[in-house]
Image (tube, rainbow, N blue to C red; front, side):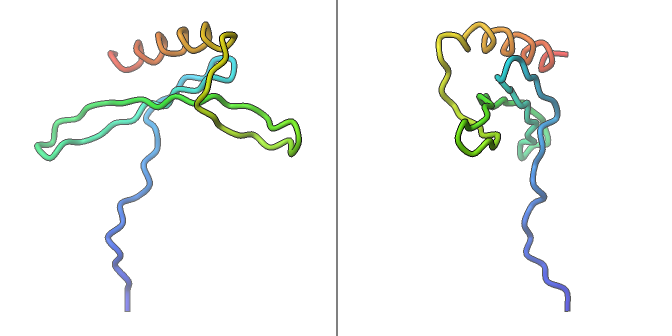
Length: 81
C-alpha cells in the first residue's frame, strides 16, 4: 500500500547572489489566488576555524556591510527583471 503523507516538496531558491561570503537566496511563493511574489533570505557563509566545516550565520561585521549592500543591490536587480 502506498503511503501518502501530503508533504510539499522542499522549496529551493529560484536564484541567488554570493558576494564575499554574503549569500542572498531569492524565493518565489504562490498566493491562494495564484499570483506570485518573491522574498529573499540573507546568510553569512563562513568556515568554522575548529571543525573546518562550512556554516551559515545571520550576523554581519562592519567589514561585511559593503558586501551585504552590494549583494542586496544585485538581488534586487534579479528580482525586478
